[in-house]
Structure formats: C-alpha cells, structure tokens
Length: 499
View 1: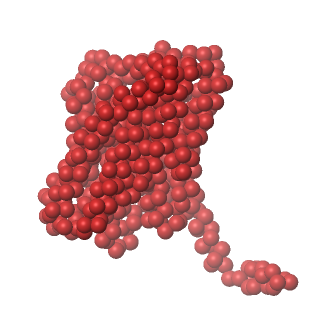
View 2: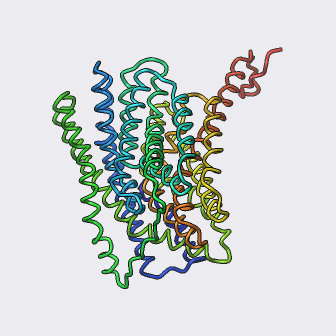
View 3: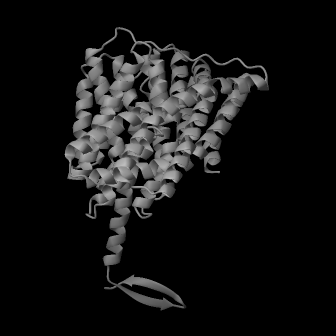
C-alpha cells in the first residue's frame, strides 16, 4: 500500500499531461502503465528486503568496525565496502552506459574509488568525532577548485556521477553503518554522528571524477536519446518487459553478490548472527534482489522513454514555459517514489525520538525536489551554466550549517543524497534530455547535471526547516520560563503571567 500511494501521484500527473498537452501512442501509454505497476511491486519487495537484510547487515559491519582497535583493518574494510556498494548501484550503471566517450569501466572504477575513500573518511569522522560541517565545507571547496580545471562539458559529468551513486543500495547500507557506529557510543554527539555518512559518500566520487577529467579529457562527449520500443499489442508490451528482465537480473545479481560475499566473510570472522538471524537476512536479501530487478525493469522500459517523449514534445511546443510549473509539480510528488527516501525518513524519526517526523521530512524533501526540477527546466530553457546554480546553492547550504543544530545539517545533506536515486536517474534525467533535445541544446551540457541540482536543494530546505524548529523550541522555552498563576473560569483553567 505504501508503494502504491508513492507511485500513484506521479502516474496521475503523467497521464494528465498526456491527455492535455502531449497525446501519446497507445502502445507507449501501455508501456508506461506497465512500468508503473512494476514500480509498485518492486518498491514493495525492496522496502521489505531493506528492513530484513540491508539494515541489519550494515549495522553489524558498523558495530564490528568500532569494536576493533586495528585502524588499518577499519580502513581496508570500509574502502572495500564502499567499492562493492558502488559497483552494485543501478543508477550509476544507467549513467555510465549513456556516456559513450568515456569507457564504461573508467567511470565505474573512478566513482567506486571516490566512494570507498570517502566512506573511510565518514567512518573515521564518527570514530574520532570530527565535525561534519568542517569536513563537508573542505570537500566542496576541493570540488569547485577542481571544476575550474575541467572543460565545460566534463563538469556536469563529474557532478552527475557523484550524485547518482547514492541510490537504493548505497543509502540503506551506509545509513545502517552509521547507526551501527553510533550505537555503541553513549556520548552526547552519538546521535548527530549517526547521520552525514551518505552526504560524504556523495561528494567523494565528484572529486574523483573531476580529477579524472583533468587527466582524461575527451574533446567531445556525446549522448543520444533512447529509442522508444514499438508495441502494437498487449503481448508486445509483455515482451518488451520480458526482454530486459534477464539483463537486469544478471547485472543486479552480479553487483549485489559482492556485498553478500563480504557479509559472509564478516559472519565467519565475528559469528555475530545466529542461525535464525542469518536465515532472515538471506530471505531479506532475496526480497531486495527481486525488488530491485522488478523496479529497474519497470523504470527502464516504461519510464525512460515516456520521460524523453514528454520533455521533447513540451519543449518544442508553443507553450514550453509550462515545463517550469510542471517540473515543480513532478519534483514535488516524485520524491515519494524514491525507495531510499523511505529508509532515511523512518530512521530519522526513530533516531530523533519522534521530534523529526516522517511527515516533516517528506514535506521538506518534496518542496526541495519541486524547486530542483523547476530549476532544471529553467536552466535548460534559458541556457544557464550548471555552476551558476550549484556554486551559490551549495554556498547557501554551507552557510546555513552554522545556524542550525548539527543533527539537522547532517540529516539535510543526507536528504539531498537520498533524493538522487533511480527515479531521478531514470525519469528526471530522461525528461531533461527530452527538453534539451526539443530546444536544440547540447544534451551533455544542459541535460547532464539534473541529478546534481536535485541533490543540492533538499539540504537548503531541510536546514531552513531546522531553523524553524529551533525557533519554535526557543519560543516554547521562553513561555515555560515565565512565572504563571492558574485562574479557574468555570472549569476552564487560564494561565496568566504573574506581575
């Protein structure tokens, strides 16, 4: 039911757009509806599998890392896990296949090294209590310095590769490692330190990709639109999904096999889990595998072509301006369809003891995503360079970190990372590609960079929300501090300030 309610709004919006603005061929429309159905099934299995397997696995690794006194072992395990979860990330696979000028494995391994290195940094931050904001500010300064040494075409690639890596596999696992690391600490800062790992994992591959761009600098980087599968009958629709299913199963199984292998090695060394827990984790791992395969099959066949078609048709029409409000509306509702968002929101509510509710987080992320997609549409329509949006955006987000509680800063930047999952890479990015194609703009220069803008806006919105919560708490504290006398008026008690 949660998965159905998450996918329903974006499905209704696309259907209304097709009825009002962009008439869609019946076959393509059926592909979209089939994709929506698979998204619901896949997200349901995935969420169940994360609760049963990925979170316990991550927490166990985090606890075992903290218990060992050998720093080199923590570094090796942390780096290896960072590489494994990166290779398993489906959104990165999608992006790497689309950028033909750079060899596929160059992108995968460069991003994996960045994630591994920064996962180690995030773990050491928690162990040695390094201030999250300071590490984040230094990292983004390095990012923007490296950006100025890259060509205009490679900058979007660098930021995009970092943004897509924090998807449905990486986020639950890294969040759980953070909880595991913080769980055995009883000091005041343990709650704050349980968040922020995902945000650091996002910035690592941006640095590694921009470093690659300095040494590996192709003169041209090209990408094209994906061809829409031609279908005439319901059997053709089923065949379109069935043809890609084995490929998705093979890629996801190969990628997740590394994570499962590392887990079994950990279990042989630590004997942390009993037989019942192991069985539950294995079943949960199977659920996660099924969920991701079904989810990605639905997204790749049903959502990518529709996104490109909608973007291209609307951008080339006489009412292309409507893309800005429609983009904001799509962004507002699509956040609920990101699998990793649900994982983060639940953990935030649990860790904060209900002070930061799931509803508060959803509202903040929805507003941030709406603003992000509206910005993306504005950028493409008016030809704005990516850095003219990212630099002031991240400067504002980092300035806000000095005025909000530390836990809100960590949660805010983690929020930006979790919004850049498979829905962003496989619907918003194709939508932007279609808009760029419809306006005759370079796809690499103006479509790539969409996901990095999506990662930028939630940190600003969530931190502003944190400032509002802080002001309310201070106001409540002032009211409680005022001496009061109780006066009873016909059974109604009135508190009046004493003079």
